[in-house]
Amino acid sequence: MAYKIFGTIDVGSYELNLKIYEISAERGVRVVNHVRHRMELGSDTYETGSIGERMEDELCATLLDFKKILREFGADEYRACATSAIRETHNTPVLLDRIYVETGIRLEILSNAEQRFLGYKSIASNEENFRNYIREGAAIVDVGGGSIQMSLFDNENLVATQNIRMGTLRLKERLAEVEERTVRYASVIEELLNNELKTYRKLYLKERDIKNLLLMGNYLGNINQFIHRKEPVGNQFTKKEFIRLYDYFIETGHQAIAQMLGIPAENGTLLTPAMVIYKRLLEETGAENVIILNNDLGDGLAYDYAEKKKIVVSSHNFENDIIESARRIAKRYHSDHSHTNMMEKMALTIFDKMKKTHGLKKRERLLLQIAVILHDCGSYINMAQSSECSYNIIMATEIIGISDREREMIANIVRFNSGDILSFEEVAKGSLLVQAEYVKIAKLTAILRVANALDRSHQQKIKDIRISFRDDHTMNIGVSTLEDLTLEQALFREKTEFFEKVYSIRPVLKIKKTV
Image (tube, rainbow, N blue to C red; front, top):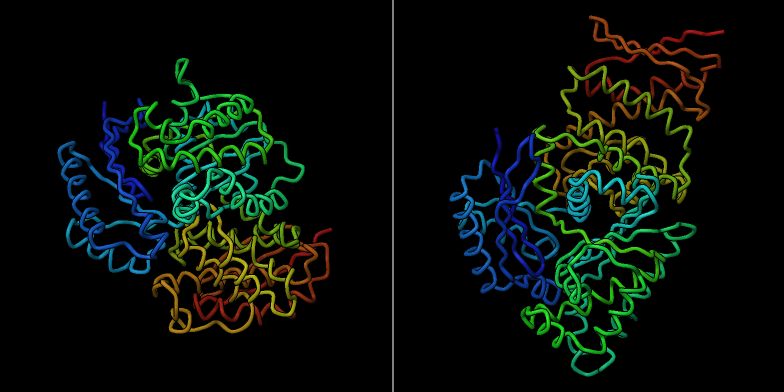
């Protein structure tokens, strides 16, 4: 049986995790070793904005140990990722360089949207259970040290996802002084959470029926152990059972609970904020069933690797979840749904017919599709400056599964849909984008402009589109229509000049009247 050994390193807010997997087509993704090292990196980050030298030393030493273990297991490849504890430091580039110089490990900083998408993929690795969980209304709640991510599903489709910057370690650090002065510590945590949850409820939970609450996060194993301490440990319980045990937990105190469970007292300090978060989310969603998921970021990284290497094939379309997430954002800003659908069809047809010309890959096709879906959302704010407003909306909105760099690329494609296109030097100011990404932005913008020109009236006059190329550097766009395309013809040249500059190909509109 052919298999690969793959390793994952997760540098989290209060723990470093090394997982080693055996991956094969026959047995799927299987954990063969798991090493944890407790380190509250988030304590430094969330309190001071940077990680102290002593903690940096410990981090590098631990990563060297992890690298040694990877070699001992003969890992074919590995992926090392960090989340908010490193993402939010003031000295991230310097820290990453030091880690690479001392350990040889290139630590990848995941955006929140990428991190949560990988966590979501880790659940889907158990496909049968995953489909059962999300068939009815469900919410996946991933509680980390820095934040909470809530993803809502309806009829197996991802319908909304949102991040709340109120993780267990962040709450603990913000309320450290309060804990020492009051016996109402849990109530104070609730007060801090309530405002964020009130806004979330208004925006996302109206008229939504949540039956199952799926929980992910550190220390869930300890909470599950506490809940099932008098019976065999399972992974499900009811809302009523949780509330009853929550009251007992608060009355007993986290120190006594930690002793009861045989875990370090320092771990116990994070149980209270975690319990309060889960209790409030149960109350807000109205879910009756709670399912604890024993998955983490490492599992998502391994599953993502296996999928990309085509070792495992998922029946769930994760790319569609990203697209649906973008559609929900467009709907929130009342974008013209019919116009967007028409543009989407035309833009993707042009992209697919130009594969040999533009040299872009499937991922860039996805970025173009999202740009089309979101190109008109800025009209909700200011119709006269819709492209600029769309740019600002996209830059301020997380799109699950999309990195920060990719989101910036999408935002610029949309911004350049109309008006002048900025030079690379102007775009690069205050940006992490490199020249190769700027070129991709230009190529995709050119396609977006042509697609937009074909439905300039927003009336979806075109019924069919065909693309063909001639030897004289001409791209014929043949369209079938019953309607008058005078407006589209008049403005076509204006919108396609940039396309010709980018590709040295002149688009020509060929109209066929149908009866």
